Image: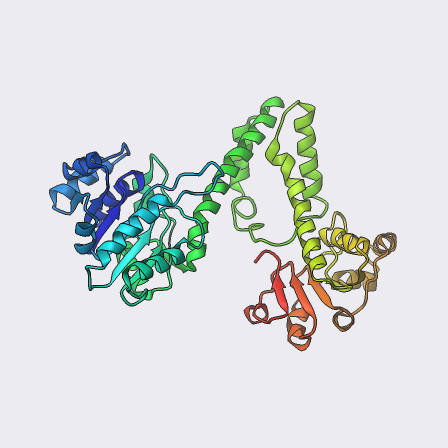
Length: 437
C-alpha cells in the first residue's frame, strides 16, 4: 500500500482518490475549497460520475480516504503527491499554470519540513517543459536536490467523462516521464495492478501527448461529421460508410501514415481528396477540414524548402524523386515539387533515384519517365556517390540503406532527412538533421 496525497478535488482528483483507494492505497485529498474537503470526508464524491460514488464511500468506510485543506498535513503524511488541478486556457489559448504552481509552491513549503524522499506527480495537462520548471522551482525554494530528496513525474491522465473509472482502471497505456528513477519505480508500484503497459518516456513527450491525443480526437469527430454531411446530401447511410471505414485495421485504424515526415503525393490521395471536396462543393457544403488538407500538405513542402534555403547552399543533391519508395511513379510527387522549388531558387540540383534507374534499365515506363524528367529539366545521375561528391547538402526523401552506410564517410556534406533513416547511430552525427524530428 502506498500513501498518496491528491491536490485538487475536482474531476481528475476525485476520480483518482476513488480509484486509488479501490486499488488499496491510502489517499489524502487536499483542496482550498472547504466544501469539497467536507464531501470527501463525508464519503461523498465532488462530481457526478458513474461508479465513483461507490468507490469513495467504500474507501472512506475502509479508512483509506480522508481530505484536508492543509498542504503540510497532506505532504508530511504521504510519500507521493499527485497534482490534479485545472489548467484553463488564457484568452490567447495558452494553458494557465497558476493553479499548478500554487500547488507546487505549497508542496515545496511542506517539503522543507520533511527529510524523506518525496515524489511529485503532474496529472494536470501542462505544456512541455513544465516538469523541468517544477524541478528547478522546488530546488530553489527548498535547497533540496532533485533525484536525491525529491522527484517529479509527468503522468498525464486519459479520462473520458462518463467512463472515467473504466478508463482509470483499464487504460490502454500508462505514461510516465521523469529523469528520477526512484520516482518512476514508485509510480510503477501504484499502477502495477492495472495490467496496462507502463511506458517510460522523456518528460516533454509525456507532457505533449495529451495535447496530441485530444486534438486527434477532435479531428476524428470533425472528419466524421464532414463525411456525414456529404453522405447525407447524397442520400448515403453515413454510419454504414464509417462502420466500413473502421473495419479496415490494416490502413485506416492503424499506425500506417502516422509517422511525421514529408508530404504525401501519388495518383490516389490527391485525386480522391480533390474528388471528395468537389462532391461537397457540388452539394453546397462547407467542409473546412477536408479543404485544409491539401494546403497543409503543400505547407510541409514549403517548410522543407525554407529549411534548405536557410542553409545558404548552392549545390544540392536529392536522393529519391518518385512519390514514395518502391515505385517509379512521378505523379504528384512531393520530391518533384521540392526539386522544382529549389531550381526556382537558383540552386544547382542533382538527383539519384534507384527505382527510376531500375525502370530505365528494364525499359518500364521509359518513355513516360524520360519525358517527365526532360520537361522538368532535372539532372538524374546513376549513382549515389556522384550526389555525395558534388553536393553541399543532400536531401533524403526515401529510407535508402545505401545512403545510410555512406553518411559517416562524408562529414563535410550536410544531410537533411525527410524519410527518417532507420539507424539511430546515423541520427547522432553532427552533419545529419531530421525534418519532423
